[in-house]
Image (cartoon, rainbow, N blue to C red):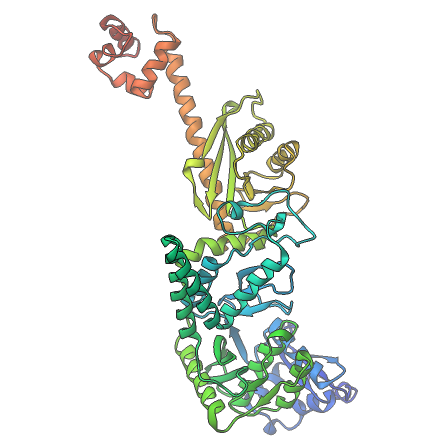
Length: 608
């Protein structure tokens, strides 16, 4: 036996968590115990008393680790987190629905934000979801956008204040509380309405919107009346989707499980004020030897105790379970302490609550049947990519307006710069700009980049154009430093700048020595790659055009009687040296300022 009996005899009798490891130091199993010594020793008694799974486990144990804690509750919480960290092969394997998004409202902030996230934290924010179908989430966001101008920036208002309002203000998406154009009281009233929408409390708001619709119609403002009509339709849709039967008290979490051979599924339905606001699903593997109580224990431990514990602001008054399990009373104790009020964990046998459990079981069976479920984002794909970009780069504001710079030349000749603009993740080609670099910098890409960035932003300031939320540089640290220098020279040091290096697709940011390496599948990286590639293409095309003109002029300049003006005329008429060479004598002679004799001379010099 790998674990000596004398070591087992010296284990603590206090509550704690134990970890069994194999000969490669991999964690095989994590368990909790009211008394560590008694629980661990039970694995090493008569083999006949062990389950088949535990007999196999004991054969592989090479080492033991124990962690003593202060109470059973602490042991339960620690066990849940260690299982999620190590994913031991002998624990019930679970895969939760992290891919499903939530709508997060940062109600703890003076000026709350509303955005989509896949990370639920115990940070006093309100989370609505998860949305297992994208339709309801998009509909909720659409209603919010039509009615309210919630901010998307990350400034710690009112402590941090930018010097100017971002693009959202100019396009009517925000009333710019960041620069004092909207008071905290006005903004708070707006976000209170948003929370009501997401909670499903739409009746009062619907009446208000109907009143606004009638007022707009009476004032012949039919565009606004139509907008309010669409909001009413959206509110009705949300209410219809969320309505379920009333449970006693109305605030409950309903847990359901389903299984089929080696696989299983568990679900937690979140019901508040009689409204179904979302569900959290988990899938189990290799559970043929596990009891329903074991599945249920794993499900609720992961859901309520993992990742730092449950969000106290969002705990229900009742948690309804389909069957009992050993730690039910302990779970109730932990949730009650977290919420600061009684949270009952019960197994109802009849009535409305039992019918809710049947609904949860139906949902769990559906999750089991749809093990591979993919979200489709459609029109929200670009928007989510921008929020992802904000998260990955830790930007203060969502980069709705981005500009990317690239430098192109051939051995220091015909050096040009490009500035490509993306708005809401899509190219805005009318705003593209290219420029010939005026400085005689030769192969010095850094000086050329500084000139390009400086000229572009100086023009933005002179013409009062919106300042981009994010500047992307095609290059590495050197090009990034040149761009930062140019922006500081224009007193625009607050503008966010990053550089994307081609070889390893590393993202460099000012003041950070190591680059950021984004996952190759991350949509945030895809946005950066797309705008970088577009800037490179646009710069290269302009560079080739200039080189083509230079080639044309150099060869035509050798022909007697064809000076700079006539070279320009030929270029405009035929587009390239090949175009001139392919033209007939009659076509060249018809160009103003050219004769038959001059046309013949040109073609002779060009080898025709």
